[in-house]
Length: 324
Image (cartoon, rainbow, N blue to C red):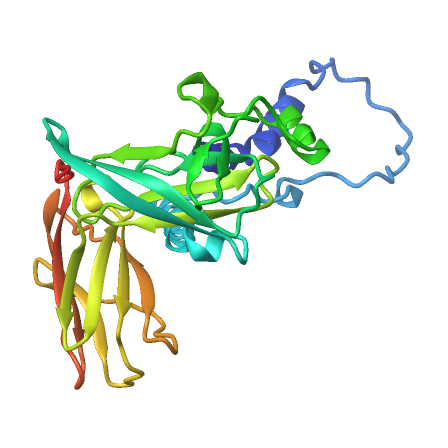
């Protein structure tokens, strides 16, 4: 918004300032010269008239600025939703996969703390890997380096975690700081664990990538799903941000039915949800459940057809984010 505001408001300044400068830098008026008896020569230079000045660029109205800001926000939300939806197999190197295996749960004052180990397939023993996480409302962050997948397929701290293992990795490390080595906090061979507390509908997003960022795998897991099912059709709501300002709507088990209706309803306002159901009966879409004059509320997502009618509801708005 800052950059847009500067562009929108500043583009007209050079012409205006230039025009003012020209009008203020004219020499002071001189006393009139005595009238000459001869007729002066005609000037060949055209006289600049006010009507000849270029029109001043249009300054957006407050309404136009608000509309442009809303369009920018929609684009940003679309990019965010697309990245979140693709976190997993679509973002992974072909032939490489990652899995979160739960190893324990315990109750804490901040919610249910869940621990997972990482299991990988398709990784080679020479790959030095970096653990990457993407929490809600935060940037994607490199957490720990020096990881490898052992013969059992488990992610462990590598004994060779002191630095890059190839010229390509070395070049990448020279331009991008490495995350702290796992050897700073654990012994070589120790399994890598992930610990987190999450809310209903919140996904745990994790990845293992090589130092040069050219290979790797990502995984997404929702420990406490928000979902509704009917006759084999399932709709799931996944938080795209805290307080559900943005959510992903995922569906599976749906047939190619041209008569279906998919939408959401909040405070009596119904909105269609435009998605494409693929050949496998799956779809994914994004929804921003904001309703004017309401800081919080409940939204129902519904699917209606002759084959199934699943529905699911979720709460959104101020202070609604609470870990389980």
